Image (tube, rainbow, N blue to C red; front, side, top):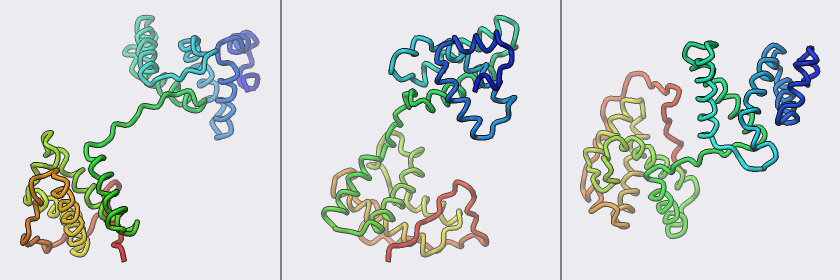
Length: 246
């Protein structure tokens, strides 16, 4: 691949003798298969040469490279660009270095992907799923729907919880959430389904003593019939309620 891109014998020899030569060849061939323009491939080859030099100590090992190490190398590279006068801020140089290095090492299977931090309510939903599966024998569709509605509420509630978990949730919070869903264009049947799913979730939460009592209470009357907007707007990224279980 390098022979096709680099016509200057001295430049080609420098690329061939640099670390990760075979790995760089494979990556460039992969990008060529994706129909990258030749000018873009030449630029990638030049940038990969810089990246490979920064990580030459990893060439003979199987150790994976952390994202933080790539970011540190990118910052050093950007600073060197500024010091040499080849860039004013180094911002774009650093960003391109980090993006290319991350994509290349991921392609090679050498990237240590960051472990996503579990959301604050993950263990609650796991327990709820286990209860519905093993003790209530509910269908997978019903479990999915109830968890979906519970998760929608918990995501919405996150900025309001102030580190208190669900123990501080009040009926007014649930009421505000349903009003928000109504304003997003949810139908009355979807609002009723959400209220019912949340009632079941908080009964379970009360049973597990995650909160003092079910915020719905025994006789609370949910107000589900706010005038819905004239036009439902399910914009990109807006949650759409799932079909109800039959």
